[in-house]
Amino acid sequence: MELPSLLKFLAGLVTQLGDIGFIILFLVFFYLLDGKRFSLTDNRSKSFFYLSTIFVVSVVLTFFLKNLFRLPRPPSASAEVAPIWMKGWIEEIYISMTTGSGYGFPSGHSLISTSFYLGLAHVVKKGTRKVRFSLALLIVTVVCLTRILLGVHYLLDVAVGFLIGLFLFFAITLLIKPAE
Image 1: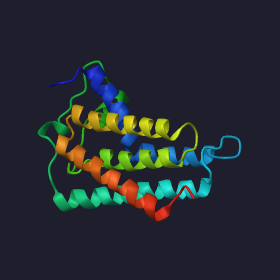
Image 2: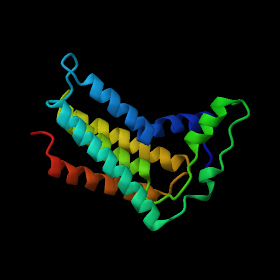
Image 3: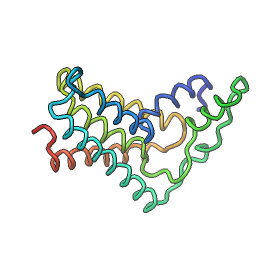
Image 4: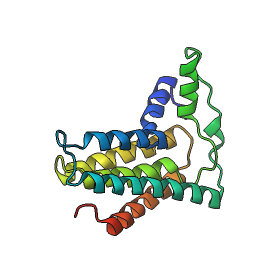
């Protein structure tokens, strides 16, 4: 099933929530905003260390597992052509957001976004715990679905990435105990 180009572009934008570059920028802004005037956590330094640890470990683990298994992506993962109405730099952005390269298993976007956004829900103290974790799971679900809709991963790639990300979240949370 081929998505219309505008819908594919929107899916490409949403999937960036699980992208390494986006999460690095998010971490920087999170650290800068979590101050006295806009307090998000109980302990800014410990929360930043915790989230940075989750992020770095998930990225390293993703690259390790991809190179260990060396399983390919779906055949259509790198075959995207921009619509005729997209020209110049927007065409390049469209193609980079809607395609995938390298090994496919497990999905890095699903692994990284699962561990990171659940970690974020754990340390942020605004709103109720239920709302924070529901929002985190919504973001993770949407990122995971966009990976499949864009045709850059198989369902198994995404499901295993999610499960590893979930395990990583629990393991790092038990080791670092950011809520104390």
